[in-house]
Amino acid sequence: MRNKAFTLIELLVVVAIIGILAAVGVVAYNGYTSSAKKSAATANHRNVVKYITTEVMKCSTGAATAMNNELDCSKQGLNNWKDFVAKGVEKSLSGFKNPYFPSEPAVTHGGGITNDKFVGYNRMLSPGLKIEVMTCVITPCSGTRCQGDNHLCSGDIILD
Picture (cartoon, rainbow, N blue to C red):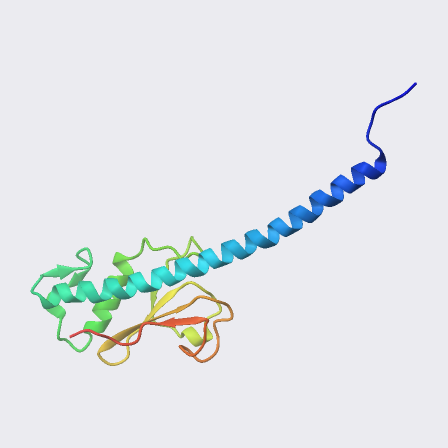
């Protein structure tokens, strides 16, 4: 009686090959998703900076409101104008999602990025009469801000 079947060695070789392919695939997938998250955080950063610049420009051209009616342009020129702008940005961009933590908002005001343990947030800091947008795109987020590859910094966005 002659049975046609695979031997135990042949089956083990197939299982080993599938295991090796799966291990390579998981590593490649993790690298792909991490670079996609970094790219999304970088794009969010650029979009927030452009949004602030263009919406504040609306107020300078005489509009009554900006940022989807979240910013009252009549407050322009006050000492705390930057705070009104930052709050307007937070409210009007509340739909932006942090690519690393999708249930969290991507735009926040205040806090210190150099002590931040989380990645992907666009933090608006408002020293003087300007706003700076800083984003940590790679952990660890600690260290000297704007000096390494893990932080993106907008520079000063002047609000006059």
